[in-house]
Image (tube, rainbow, N blue to C red):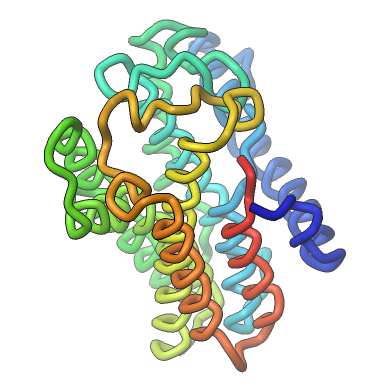
Length: 300
């Protein structure tokens, strides 16, 4: 895959860097201070949230809000809630009862650093904080309700959690393309789809624009997980910041295992092209296209 700097133009580079900083600053203000009792729990929250994530989901939320004609400030609280949910999912995904990983983003996983019980509770706390943030920080009650509904559906039994169950159940079983697509759509795609949808909601977008941005997010989410599968096969532990080759070791259903590496690359490219085709003529369409292509060419 192309190096990241070959794909990122200066406009997208500046946008990503500035929004990452804004999101981090906002999350810092929303999380309880590390010294607040119970200290160990709040230390664990901050340890995982500020472990160096790319902030793909919150930045997409802000970008979608702009694309729908809204002000980014109105989407900041939902954007932070998306990162809290994503971080919770990573903490739980790394647990011994699931993927049993020791490293995440180049650091010890939460359960290795703080113990399994605290890690579970840290994930629970981030999940509940996400909905507290939306319900208390979004001024328009109808938009707050719509954002909460969108997020809850995306991460429930018909979304991320359901996808995680299917992922676990599929380990070591006969690989089918239909099952791989279902797992990816639910486990990863639904939260990224919700990111763009929530941005549109915060902008007060028309249903047509909201649907276009939701479709964009779904395709970007699919591409993201396909690339993740490829990186697990080809990337190094040092670059990825987590143990490479775990999907193969656990005999998971992945795009490379179902389509081969070249087939997986084609599928990722097709998903990105589909995402880009759906947002022509929207405001910030250029940034949306660049953002999708960044997902395709990421190396970690």
